[in-house]
Image (tube, rainbow, N blue to C red):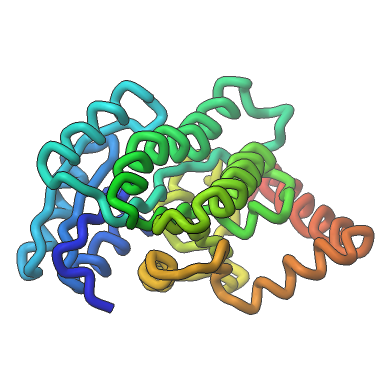
Length: 268
């Protein structure tokens, strides 16, 4: 898939899925806008693009801040005049029971993961509609379909993202602008470097994905008519079972992840 002369904006571009997505689009000739809070990290990622043909533009921005997003979108449109693909990837998670987390920690996740996506979409969508082309890719999670103990507030942000995306997907029908959600299972990224995961056996089960695998799905999603791409696709069966037989699946999920919470509290 060739993206030569396509302008691609990627939030959360400084590491993990965002960094891998930057590289995958750059390989295909796209002009890349790297967006994240940490400019020094963005510059490190940008150095990796020197061998590719497309241009790059670093834009420091905290997507949870509406004013910063407005300014960021103005800079991008002033420089390129258009945006062809917007990848809303910025997000983070804090592990712990709802009773343990502060209200501020819960709100902060919603501000970045959900409202950050809203702010970026609202800032870029009018231009896409005006040019009658473009695609929005929202990076959610299989957690958008499962309420998991220990990450209830994170799941809420992804439930919200998926619901918003479904409604907007329908609204965009016939406009030339598309929207696709990418929902991976656990991904091996710095997302889990938060101190709250210190006693969490992150990838011990072997059921996890590389950032590169998700990035390649984002490439596919950017030209897809589908609402949601689940990664790996076999996980779609789990979502179907949960939605069809919730009385059977929900207790299994609850027991499995409650054990992880209990284990976390035990001394090594």
